[in-house]
Image (cartoon, protein in one colour):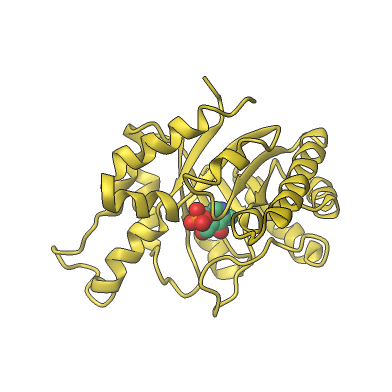
Length: 250
Ligand code: PXP
């Protein structure tokens, strides 16, 4: 049995609710309920729940984060951009973990990793404040040795390696190169005593490649699981992903 853990990102459960009920948040018809979904993921075996509170509130709302904090049994990983407004929410709600991500208003989803080298000065005070509240911190980075080193210097507990390049590789050659980069970054991060997580674009096909990245502790997966749930239900979708992850050699 692999000990690779799964954090399910529930953003797109909230997306489905928002497309109909964004202007009627208190409606008794508002569905699907995010807490029911999160609890279902946990009962299916997920070891954590992930949600991204974006500045434009396009899917997850502040109230969702509060309710997740109150109701989930595993751990809450709040993904957030490094802005004073969202930092205030994090310090009020105190999730178990925060994953700092870059955020652009016009992007469809998080596009690249956080440039830890360029943003060091603005990251430092945020990291300090989150640590003071006892929150474990992850930095979502591109899989390069430079970013891993910069993350290690900032004293965070974890990095999440951006797997989008691998997931979206058009050719086998690019796929191979992306996998090698991820493997090298994972080794380097682990040798710097960072917990190594991975996420973005992971699905039921490319999980076989992800399973070839060494030293991983956790995968954070959203879109593919919520999409699969349309066909088989959330419980089965989570269990299927956990079964694929169980092949991780460790
Ligand atoms: N990890 C991070 C840091 C992300 O920004 C996202 C997307 O919100 C995910 C994981 C999940 O990505 P996906 O929805 O493609 O599985």
